Length: 143
Ligand code: HEC
Image (cartoon, rainbow, N blue to C red):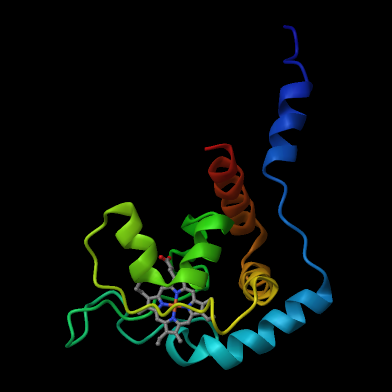
């Protein structure tokens, strides 16, 4: 039997290659995460207690950023914009009716700082999850 050509496989591997961040960027992201995100999303990225159930205000608490949450279900562009603009502005633009408790950080953090935080979060995921998320990022860019 003829073997399938190798080229498409290589293209696929290239498309989903995991974004590499320098150790310095990840360290910076770790420190910024502790300062700006950990209070709600948890020091170990574990999320707020009972995060899948709406709180007394009807809003969903902060989800984990580790592999047990759904952060990795989204590509980098969404995660960046969600953090920069906040959940409400992001979802309003999509026409999604949702009362979001996720604040905007665009006035607090530079784009590079947000990217560093996301690089840190990604760096904590197992390789398999990093690969799936990298594919989402690639698909998002192709949209
Ligand atoms: C005041 C509490 C609070 C702080 C501080 C906070 N968040 Fe959130 N975040 C939330 C809540 C609540 C949600 C869930 C509601 C939503 O998705 O809009 C959320 C959701 C998110 C999501 C969407 C995750 C998903 O899977 O849909 C991302 C990404 C995110 N936060 C990133 C960050 C980052 C990065 C920081 C630090 C720079 C941060 N958050 C700081 C409360 C917070």
